[in-house]
Amino acid sequence: MFARLKEEIGVVFERDPAARNTWEVVTCYPGFHAMLVHRFSHQLWTAGFKWLARFMSHLGRWLTGIEIHPGAKIGRRFFIDHGMGVVIGETSEIGDDCTLYHGVTLGGTSWNKGKRHPTLGKGVVIGAGAKILGPIEIGDGAKIGSNAVVVKSVPAGATAIGIPARIVESHEVGGRFAAYAVARDANDPIAQALHELITHSTEADQRIAHILAELERLGGRIEEQRETPFDPNYLNRIVD
Image (cartoon, rainbow, N blue to C red; front, side, top):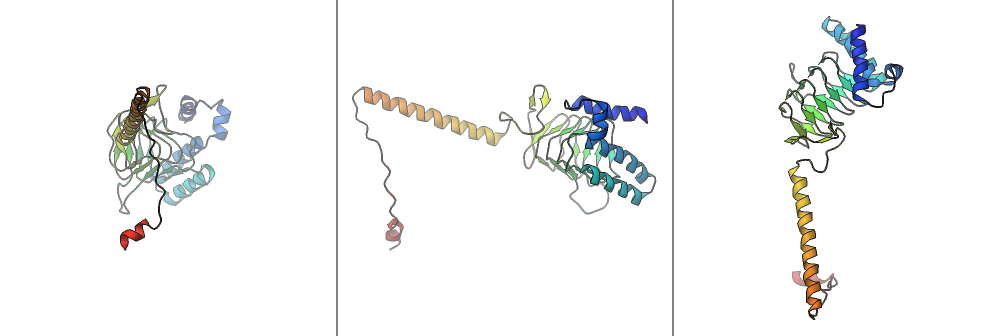
């Protein structure tokens, strides 16, 4: 028991550079508190004390702002950073060494009994505000960008971003996944198309300015095109 407790504390130091000492982690980290409550409530749930397990989970939610159903199966060295607004559904399964940021939802898309929540492999990282919905699988080492909405399975080692989420090339900052935002140079086809259009427009403007300057240098006369004031009666005349 104490070995597992020490392991849970060590995870905080490993993944949160703001952690200063053990006393601070034990007293001030809601993710750590939520996991302590869940370990206990999950044991009650599997032992058949369903109401007591739900009540313990409810107290943990009130204390930490993190809602974890006691039926969820969570592996070792699980870390919730900040934690406020995290929701983990009943049939969720989370592998070892996973990390969730605040506002993450592991939710269901059906009211039917049975498996209806996601399964996360080992070492999965889910960015702030992301929603993983339905009985889908997120492969080992996969990364989900912030505010993504994932409704289809993600293969191992892949990075998914957007609404709905799509697979892109992995983007890391300083060797670490950017869990709070998608960087500008991520392989987003829409963003790339917009950047190419802006670049093309800027280059065209520069070329036109160069041509006009050369014409003036050669003695050509260039008249500026002035905008014609809008006549409010123009449309009425067309209709008449």
